[in-house]
Length: 259
Image (cartoon, rainbow, N blue to C red; front, side, top):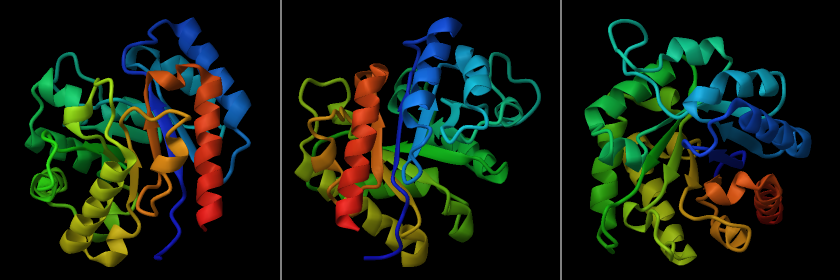
C-alpha cells in the first residue's frame, strides 16, 4: 500500500439545474450538510450559467467547486467560450475536462482536450479528466493506455500530482445497467498500472482515480472498496442532496475501514 490519497466525491450538474435560485439553494444545502467533513474532498460543478452565484455561496467553505469546461486558450478570439481567467477570478478549484459528451456532441479531440488540461495545470487548478473505453473488453488496457497518453501528452512528474482521473466506460453511459463493481475494479487497477508504466510509481500513487458511472448509495461502498479507487463522481442521483451526503459518508466509512 503506497501513500494515502484523500478520498474525493463530487457531482456535476451538467445543464440540469440552470436557474440561479435553484442552483444557489442546492449549493447552500451541500454546504450545510457537508462543509464540516474534513477527511473527504467534496466538490460541486454547477452549470456554466450558474457558476457565479454558486461560487459566491461556496467561497470560503471547504466545498470545492469549478467548471465543466474551459477554452483551450486563456484569452482572445474564441467566441462563445469560457475562459480559465474567469474560473480563477471566481475562486474555482477545478475544471472538468474531456467528458464523453464533449467528445461526441461537441467534437472535441484529444489534442484539444490535452491543450485544456495543460492550461488548467499551468494555471494551478485541478483537472478532473474523464477516461473510459468505448467497448466492453478484456483487452481494454490498450485503448485506455492510448487515451491516457494522448490526454496527458507533454506532462510529467510533479505537474500531474494534482490530477484526478474520472473513469467511466463509455459503453455504460446512460445505460440501465452500469458496469459491475468487479469490472470497475479491474479497470482501475489497469489505469493505475498504465500510470505507473508511463510516469513511474511515485507519480502514479499521487493521482486520484474516481469512478463516474451510475454510482448510488447502494453500490457506493462496494465500488470504493478497491484501494485503487479514491472516490466517486455522481450524477442525477445526487441532485437530492441527502443522497449525495449519504454517498460521501459511505465513501468516508469505507476508506476509514481500509486504512
